[in-house]
Image (tube, rainbow, N blue to C red):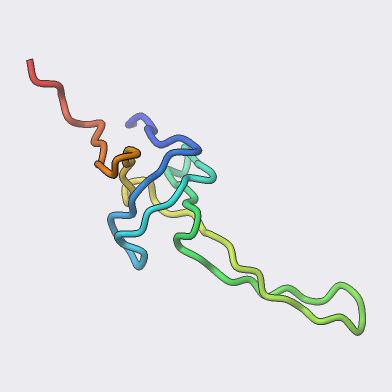
Length: 89
C-alpha cells in the first residue's frame, strides 16, 4: 500500500476527468478510500425538500470526492510536485 501524500489544505491540480486542468484547495481527505475533496471540483447538486409547509425547497451544490491519483500537488509558484521522483546522487 502506498503512502497517502496529499494533506488537507494542499493546493492541487486535477489531471483527469471532467474538471481536468482546474486547481483547488483540498478540503477533506479519505485515506482508506484513497479519495480527496477539492474545492470547486466535481460539483454535484442535491435537491432538498422544504422542511415546513409553504416553504420552497432548495438546490445545494457541493464538491464530491475524486480519486487521489487524479490530482497532483502544486507549489505557490505553480510548479507541480512529484513525490515519486528520486533525488539525483
